Length: 98
Image 1 (cartoon, rainbow, N blue to C red):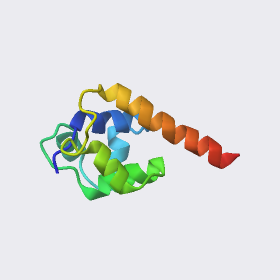
Image 2 (cartoon, helix red, strand yellow):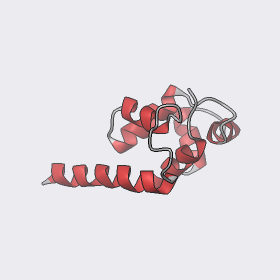
Image 3 (cartoon, rainbow, N blue to C red):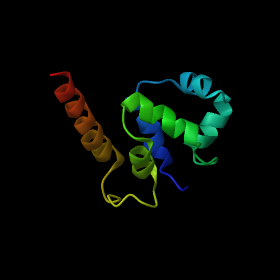
Image 4 (cartoon, rainbow, N blue to C red):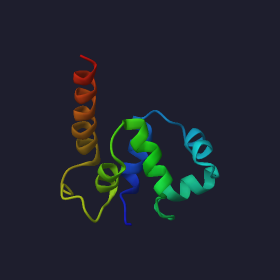
C-alpha cells in the first residue's frame, strides 16, 4: 500500500507517542520505524492496528486515511486533515461520555 508517510508521523505526534515507545510496542527496531515513517518500508498492519486502537477507530478507516492512493482530499494540507478528522473523533468521544 502506498501511504502518506508525513501523515503517519503527524498521527504519532498527535497521539503523543515517542518513536521509541511505538517501536517497543510493535517489537521492531527504532531504525525500522524510522524507515516506515520515511516511506522506505511499507506500513505494517500491526502499526495501523496499534494506532487505530489508540484512537478507538476501525483500522480500515485509518488505513483509508493513510492511503495516498485512496484519499480524495489530496488538495488539503496534512494539518487540515488531521484537525478535521481528529477533532471529529474528540467530539464523538465527548458525546459518548455524556
